[in-house]
Length: 427
Image 1: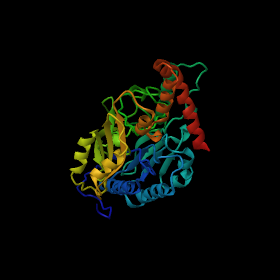
Image 2 (image 1 turned 60 degrees about the vertical axis):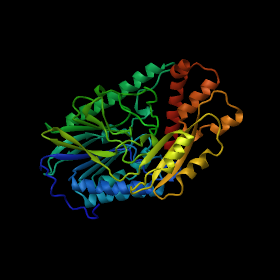
Image 3 (image 1 turned 90 degrees about the vertical axis):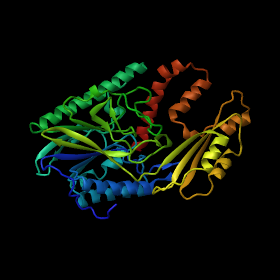
Image 4 (image 1 turned 135 degrees about the horizontal axis):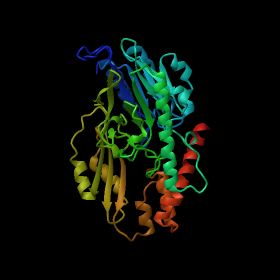
């Protein structure tokens, strides 16, 4: 990749067209099996700067989850601020819009908001209708679009729950509340835009029909709760830039409602996913086209599953990996009985290699009767399970019927979990 950020003269761009780059779910500061991703994120951000300049991007929109946690490490904060500084100083981009996700702390994102606004970087860490309508301008300096910069909507932003509310009732309440907020945003955008401008919306949520990976933490949307359909977004929206789902995809086949996905593979469930950003071009007050810009330098993740002998053979004969980063491997071994040396066996089969490394070995037992020692040996690690799965299994161990757990206990658990996360972020 060139070190300088000179224009690519082969990119033909009309002066009155607006080119918007849609990205999301960076999860800066994320670790996988206690391995940091600093170098991978740095490579992505360098590529993104180069791409913004090469494609003559006018505005960058990030649809939530800048960071992986509410209290990101110093290196993640430094990478974020350095990127924003270079974006506005070294590229064609004239505006950036950053919205909060469920992993982000609104306080952390909003802290430098006033300072960043002076550099035309608009940060919307939490829901505030007064700050969510933002104008974008084309290369000629004329208004070209209005953005409804809606962040992740927390429980306090939605209609309050009612005592005795059932799971389906709560689902309906959340969906209607989300739809209401987007309808109000559309009305505000129409009032503030010159006639004929495109309207872009952002969101960090789970849209019905979206395909999830294991790496997305549940928000109000565990199971079917809080899913919104394409019809929840007003018809005035010419493009909806979504975050939260890490697999790039259209929602229900709609060309204008899209997840950009995460730029790097955050979990082994994403091992087959392509990673890219989306370039949306607008002209004449409407969406003209959407193009995928693939990030070519991400780390490869490999998930293997099979019998012990089969996996040993695969690992011993694994082709050399020539990517920029060593390949990380998850091995799932099917067993009929406990195998105390399993981890050592798999790592010995791969050998000491600079191009590949096993991060996780998981035993999947197939027999029904297990001794206590076997259960301990084959047990899943707690960190591999979501909070919801731990709660579900505990309920099952206490003899609750699955239907009762899903309809009655789980909705209450989700609500308590959401309130706990909000309290942690505000602390």
